[in-house]
Image (tube, rainbow, N blue to C red; front, side, top):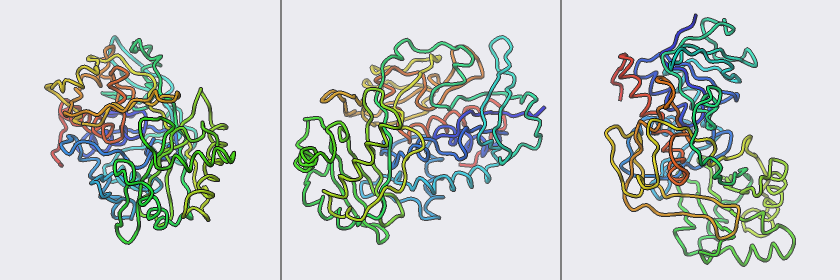
Length: 426
């Protein structure tokens, strides 16, 4: 029987961080991913850049290592606001492969946990279903046999392992945020677009640009909410009047240059409404691309070069852990003995209704405790990522990529200590 100190279900942002740091600290780690690549929201959902958070963030070794690995292959920049999270999503896949190999993490792609063996309140082993043989394979290929583990981590985003085990969830899981289906356009004259949008919009909380390594990078936004005097509004209104797009198509429209590329722009759009799915999302993407080509200088020869494989999901199932982190904890900057995250990212709640979204600034740093990652039902089961034990409003601040990195790393360091194999490598 194969034996591991740690098995992680889900190779997204929290899962890769946990796997890498745990293996670097001496644990034997198995990472199980349902896709053919790692990175989750960064890669499959094209969620770039990672949002900027506190300069005093803890458990940021993995973030820094990923940034450095991407720098070596031209896939990262530090933007003019100091944000190191501007990544190239395709190169993230390559960098993460390299990092897992260097850390001696065993990775199974296109695989899922199908059965879990338990005794009393402890996980003993798991059965894995793998869909093809082109994996970084285990030395013991007897996947029909149970694989023993000291600890099991649910980094699936939807708490799929907790669902399999019929664990208790928070009773307000009915509260939702709309999803997005992101895309990238290439063939953009970014320099021309950046020059135009910087003159059009003087609000530097919305529109920015800078030149790094000979490339021009920029960012801007528009939403259908009326809390700001959006510079793009007259152009959007004209496009709607011309039937190029609908009001719903552009209810949330945000764009960023892509690190290391001279001609690509990534869109945090469209935001899907009323339980719309992939078909509606891709139709919206086509209309938005036509809008860009017709109305935005620099996009005349642009084309859709990538559409996300999966939707960007902001909230889903949330476990009931040993501690449920609340919005009151966050806003009061409550401190804890074992914090895994320090952040000041705002409470960011999207709505599918006009003028109903929330972006509540946070003026003091807040901490997330380790206990919010611990199962209330099983002593060696944990959750990291958006499915942690936090109420709806608090989770809306904690769901960003840097915080998920910190959760995974903080848990890894804790597990390395209790297993007793800890090696100080950072």
